[in-house]
Image (spheres, helix red, strand yellow):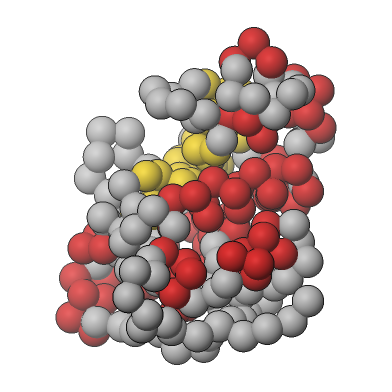
Amino acid sequence: MSGKAWKSNAPGITGLRQFVTQEQQRAWLDGELDLFDFGTTRSENIEHRFNYAARFEKLLRRPQAEDVLEILGRYGRTCIPVPRLTERDYWSASCLPATSDKPLVRVNASWMELFALYADSDGIRSRFILHLSDFTTDRSPMQDQLDRDLLDSCIAAPGDLSWFFPRGADMFGINVRGAVSIREFLAHAGALRAIRRFNLTHMNRGRNAYQTSHSYSVADHMLEAP
């Protein structure tokens, strides 16, 4: 399937439907359409970029920097629809945000965390927030129907994956430890579809609430062509 992105000015059109049709969103969800190169224009605030430049330089001095930026590149290319057109307004990436859990980077949309990376000694670990119904045997949001075989298949070493149940309907949290396992999780067809579905849900809910903490320097690595 092919197509192109546009900016709709029609009244009442919100979320990603301003840029891509619902059919295109479904095709991207199912891996039938690549939305990474839809729209090449980035809207950038230079003053805002410099506000977070020092944090990015601090991140670069961390032993985890190379893995963090490489994994963010994978995430940006495969997990966020029309990322250049929706940058900051519909998703954002915070660098070393001053929150109690002390992530290296956090990706948000609407009012929701999508993905975060943390230091784990000199390595990294990640947290994904997803729909529980993508990981149950009957595709219901019921915790007792959790498909553990599916979860084990997402990475080579099951001990690198753990999960939790955030507050809220159809919510599921997955922790993945180690750069190798995080890459495998992002490459797994079922996990990737789950990440995409959750991201579509929240990017379609409205504009991003975390625009003011967006790091353009981090986003540079998420928006690089492969």
